[in-house]
Amino acid sequence: MRRWILAALLVVGLLAAPLLSGPAAAADVGVTLIAKNVNWHVGMETAPSKPTVTVAAGDVLRLRVVNNDTMAHTFTLPHFSVNRTFAAGATIFVNITTTSADKGRWQFYCAIAGHTTGSDPNRDGMVGWVQVGVSVTLVAENNLWKVGTTTKPTITVDPGDVLMLRIENLDAFPHTFTIAHFGINEPMPASSTIFVNITTSSADNGKWQFYCAIAGHASGTGENRDGMVGWVQVGAPTTPPPTPGFEIVLMVAALVAVAALTRVASRRRK
Image (cartoon, one colour):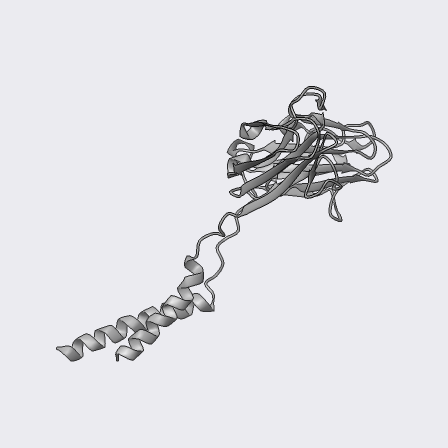
């Protein structure tokens, strides 16, 4: 009798284990960032300048920052309140713990005069970015918006998400990325790339149209334009929970069997 009870409990344990397992643990992401010729590079001096370092929300970014120039630099990342000075030939270590509140694309730079131009968060020169979360690439091509091969796309996010857009203009003429609900109207010269972060909340639930505002690229008004258009859907309808599968049914059956066997054993002892 005890063998049957133990077997049933073993089945229950094996079936319940994947159901009770938690989310994947956050990762430690190690990156070597090199300052050379008044530019930032990842991994080696010959790597492209102005790099983007991408991590998932919750990851710990562990930066080894190496100065291979003959002058001092700073590693300055305002979003994470980092501003470290390091001398020529020096190496510093910077750990950045991210959370879901950090989703977005955050610029780092050297704050020494002459090493960058412009102001936060749109400097040029000795700059790079830390991107927390995965971005969506939106492409302007042939007077249409595309995500992958889908034209007039709908991009879906949950309320509270930060939608990170990488927007590429592959046309030989300018466009705008305009989404009135979020107050965004960004010009895009021919063959350019821009980055747009959209922070959503429960107040943004709904489907909001984006378009190109240049005359002739879209027709109509308001949220009902046609032509070079797409949509951001905040708060898509939730999918109903799946019907219990074979594993759940088997687990319930095993629990019933354990209860029945326990009752029989109890009666025999009496």
